[in-house]
Structure formats: structure tokens, C-alpha cells
Image 1 (tube, rainbow, N blue to C red):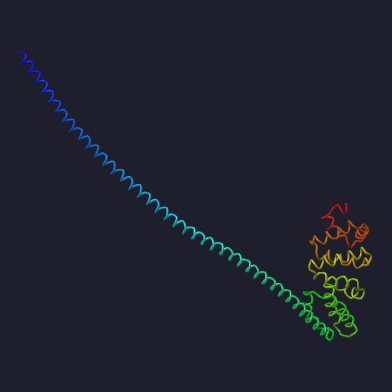
Image 2: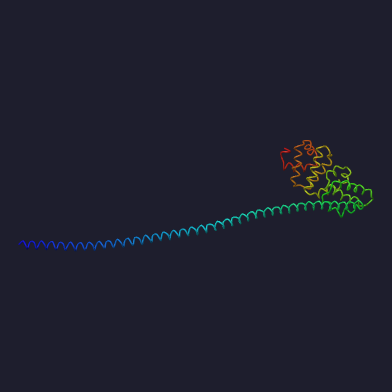
Length: 304
């Protein structure tokens, strides 16, 4: 019985020892497997770490290269922008200079044109005076030639010193014995009345010779001639330098030949308002009845 128990005990212990030995072997194998796995994982980890390191280095190199490239491109872009800015600035400066030069040229052309115009005007006036002088010298020799020059005389401005020369021709013509002296004198008188109305109307000899032709002379007036002559006689009469017969004749004829010339009636009305003696003068003379009616129709308060 003891032997059996001992046998069983030894068997159990043997089995246990075998089991432990087997377990130990398995544990060793498992440990080796674990160690191998750990070794593999370490290798993989090292490999990944190496890959990451290489990748980081590559990326760093790429970034570094990219930075250099960007810097390089930026440098050339800066150069280009600077170049273009300088070109634009130079172009602007050049354009500004051209504008100034063009303006200076235009100013020079304008000044030259003005000088030419002034010179031409002086030359024209000089030629005109010379022509008039030649014509006047001819008329002094042949007064009848006025028929060829009256049109020129009536449309051309006369210098002041021609009045006395033409007046002398008229007075000399009467004593020349020329049978048509009256008609020729009328042409001179018309020229004098147009260009020298003040002196002609104030001159007793010329007024006496003009009076028979005065209606014809006034009918040939332009409006500016009518207003200028009317203003002259009104001022001279107001200042006591013209008799009533002459102002009456002029105003009567202008009224007859310029019925709708408002500036004329406005002028006479103004003198009526400023000079009561003149107002009473025209109201008292029947020859002014038409003039008064026309003024009253335009300015009723004057004769109210």
C-alpha cells in the first residue's frame, strides 16, 4: 500500500515536473517569440524613424530649395518692378517735358502770329494811308474824280487830318467854274458827314452847302451813323453849341428814315428826362410831333 502511494506520489511529481518542464519550455519559446517580436518592432520602429528622418530631411531640403527659389524669383521680380517703375517715371518725365515743349512752341507760334497780325495791321494801315494820300493828291488836282472813289471813302475809316483837306477841295471847287461842281460837292459833303459829323454839322460853310442834300445823306445812313449823329447834335445843343435849326433838321430826318429804330427814340427820351428845356423845346415845335408820338408810345411816362 505504501509502495502504491509512493508510486502514485512519484508519478504525480514526475508528471508535475514534466508539466513544469514543458511549461517552462513553452514559456521560453513564448519569451523568444516575444523577444523576436520586440526585436522586429524595434527594427520597424528604427526603420520608420529613419524614414521619418529622411522624409523630414527631404522636406527640409525641399523647403530650403523652395525658399531659395522664391527668394531668387522675388529678387528678379523686384528688379523688374524697379525697372518698370523707372521706365514709367522716365516716360512721365519725358511726357511732361514734351507737354512743356509743345506749350512753349504754341506760345511762340501765338506770339509770332500776334506779331504778324500786328505787323500786318500796321502795314495795312500804312498802305491805306499811302493810298489815301495818293488819292487825295489826285483829288486836289482833279476834284471830279470823287465819283470813282466815293464808294471807297464811305466804307473806310478816315484819319482826322483829312477833314480840312477835303473841306478845302469843296470850297475851291465852287470857284473853279466847273459846271457840275454842286453835284461833285455833294459827294464830298456826304463823305464828310459820315466820317466827321461833328465838324461838318458845326461848320457854317459846310452846313449851308449840305442842307439841300441832307435828306439824301440821312437816308443813306446806317443805324450806327444815325445814332452817332443824333447823339452829337443832342449833346452840342444841350451844351449851347448848336442852334435849334440844325438839331431840328437832323432829328426830323432821322425820325422820318428810321421809324422803328428803338435806340434812337430811347436816346432822345433820355435827353428829355435829363433836360427839361429840351423837352419843352421839342413839345413846342410842330415838326417834332411824329417824334413825340413815337417816344410816347414807347415811354408814356415822359409825356404823361
